[in-house]
Length: 120
Image 1 (cartoon, helix red, strand yellow):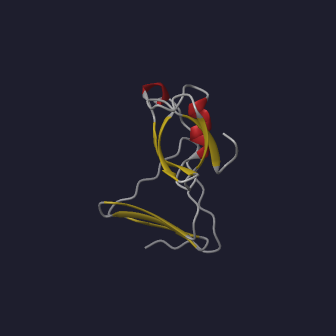
Image 2: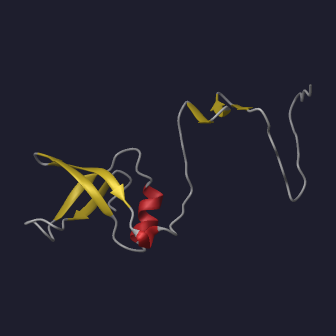
Image 3: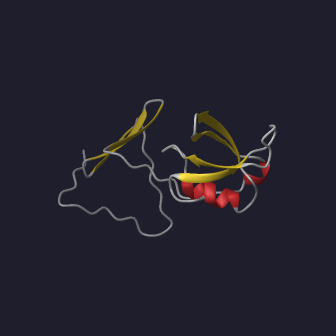
Protein backbone atom coordinates (compact mmCIF):
# COMPACT_ATOMS: atom_id res chain seq x y z
CA UNK A 1 0.00 0.00 0.00
CA UNK A 2 1.27 3.44 -0.84
CA UNK A 3 -1.48 5.37 0.93
CA UNK A 4 -5.28 5.37 1.37
CA UNK A 5 -5.87 5.89 -2.37
CA UNK A 6 -3.02 4.07 -4.12
CA UNK A 7 -1.55 0.56 -4.08
CA UNK A 8 1.33 -1.21 -5.81
CA UNK A 9 0.13 -4.14 -7.93
CA UNK A 10 2.36 -6.97 -9.17
CA UNK A 11 1.08 -8.36 -12.47
CA UNK A 12 0.71 -12.11 -13.04
CA UNK A 13 -0.75 -14.32 -15.73
CA UNK A 14 0.26 -12.08 -18.64
CA UNK A 15 3.29 -11.35 -20.80
CA UNK A 16 4.06 -8.53 -18.31
CA UNK A 17 4.26 -10.96 -15.36
CA UNK A 18 6.20 -9.56 -12.42
CA UNK A 19 5.87 -5.94 -13.56
CA UNK A 20 4.82 -3.55 -10.79
CA UNK A 21 2.20 -0.86 -11.40
CA UNK A 22 0.81 1.88 -9.20
CA UNK A 23 -2.99 1.70 -9.17
CA UNK A 24 -5.70 3.91 -7.73
CA UNK A 25 -8.18 2.42 -5.25
CA UNK A 26 -11.92 3.08 -5.54
CA UNK A 27 -13.77 4.55 -2.58
CA UNK A 28 -15.62 1.30 -1.79
CA UNK A 29 -12.43 -0.70 -1.09
CA UNK A 30 -11.95 -1.19 2.66
CA UNK A 31 -8.31 -0.11 3.04
CA UNK A 32 -8.05 -1.50 6.60
CA UNK A 33 -9.22 -4.91 5.38
CA UNK A 34 -6.84 -4.80 2.40
CA UNK A 35 -3.88 -4.02 4.66
CA UNK A 36 -4.82 -6.85 7.05
CA UNK A 37 -5.34 -9.29 4.15
CA UNK A 38 -2.01 -8.39 2.56
CA UNK A 39 -0.26 -9.27 5.83
CA UNK A 40 -1.69 -12.81 5.45
CA UNK A 41 -1.29 -13.49 1.71
CA UNK A 42 -1.34 -11.70 -1.66
CA UNK A 43 -4.79 -10.46 -2.73
CA UNK A 44 -6.03 -10.89 -6.28
CA UNK A 45 -7.46 -7.74 -7.89
CA UNK A 46 -9.05 -6.86 -11.20
CA UNK A 47 -7.50 -3.89 -12.98
CA UNK A 48 -8.76 -1.35 -15.47
CA UNK A 49 -5.95 0.18 -17.53
CA UNK A 50 -6.75 3.33 -19.51
CA UNK A 51 -3.63 4.68 -21.20
CA UNK A 52 -1.21 5.45 -18.36
CA UNK A 53 -3.90 5.31 -15.66
CA UNK A 54 -4.39 2.09 -13.68
CA UNK A 55 -7.41 1.50 -11.45
CA UNK A 56 -8.30 -1.37 -9.12
CA UNK A 57 -11.67 -2.55 -10.43
CA UNK A 58 -12.40 -5.29 -7.91
CA UNK A 59 -10.86 -7.15 -4.96
CA UNK A 60 -11.08 -10.95 -4.83
CA UNK A 61 -10.14 -12.54 -1.48
CA UNK A 62 -8.81 -16.07 -1.47
CA UNK A 63 -9.30 -18.88 1.06
CA UNK A 64 -6.31 -17.60 3.08
CA UNK A 65 -8.26 -14.39 3.78
CA UNK A 66 -11.38 -16.04 5.28
CA UNK A 67 -10.34 -15.12 8.83
CA UNK A 68 -9.40 -11.50 8.05
CA UNK A 69 -11.74 -9.17 9.93
CA UNK A 70 -11.58 -5.41 10.44
CA UNK A 71 -13.90 -2.60 11.46
CA UNK A 72 -16.54 -1.74 8.89
CA UNK A 73 -17.03 2.00 8.68
CA UNK A 74 -19.72 3.66 6.58
CA UNK A 75 -19.69 7.43 6.31
CA UNK A 76 -22.24 9.64 4.66
CA UNK A 77 -24.95 12.16 5.31
CA UNK A 78 -27.39 9.27 5.75
CA UNK A 79 -26.92 5.50 6.18
CA UNK A 80 -29.86 3.13 5.74
CA UNK A 81 -29.91 -0.63 6.38
CA UNK A 82 -33.00 -2.51 5.21
CA UNK A 83 -33.92 -6.17 5.32
CA UNK A 84 -37.49 -7.33 4.74
CA UNK A 85 -39.70 -4.99 6.72
CA UNK A 86 -36.96 -3.91 9.13
CA UNK A 87 -35.08 -0.63 8.76
CA UNK A 88 -32.29 1.19 10.60
CA UNK A 89 -31.55 4.75 9.54
CA UNK A 90 -28.76 7.02 10.78
CA UNK A 91 -29.05 10.70 9.83
CA UNK A 92 -28.74 14.17 11.35
CA UNK A 93 -27.78 13.04 14.88
CA UNK A 94 -30.68 10.55 14.90
CA UNK A 95 -31.04 6.78 14.83
CA UNK A 96 -34.39 5.38 13.75
CA UNK A 97 -35.15 1.68 14.19
CA UNK A 98 -38.36 0.38 12.66
CA UNK A 99 -39.52 -3.24 12.68
CA UNK A 100 -42.44 -5.42 13.66
CA UNK A 101 -40.43 -6.69 16.65
CA UNK A 102 -37.27 -5.24 18.25
CA UNK A 103 -35.23 -7.23 20.76
CA UNK A 104 -32.49 -5.73 22.90
CA UNK A 105 -30.33 -7.86 25.22
CA UNK A 106 -27.45 -7.01 27.51
CA UNK A 107 -25.25 -9.17 29.72
CA UNK A 108 -24.60 -6.15 31.92
CA UNK A 109 -26.64 -3.04 32.62
CA UNK A 110 -28.77 -1.56 29.86
CA UNK A 111 -29.17 2.20 29.94
CA UNK A 112 -31.71 4.47 28.29
CA UNK A 113 -30.48 8.05 28.39
CA UNK A 114 -31.97 11.12 26.84
CA UNK A 115 -33.63 14.47 27.39
CA UNK A 116 -37.02 12.77 27.04
CA UNK A 117 -37.92 9.12 26.73
CA UNK A 118 -41.41 8.20 25.53
CA UNK A 119 -43.10 4.82 25.83
CA UNK A 120 -46.47 3.89 24.28
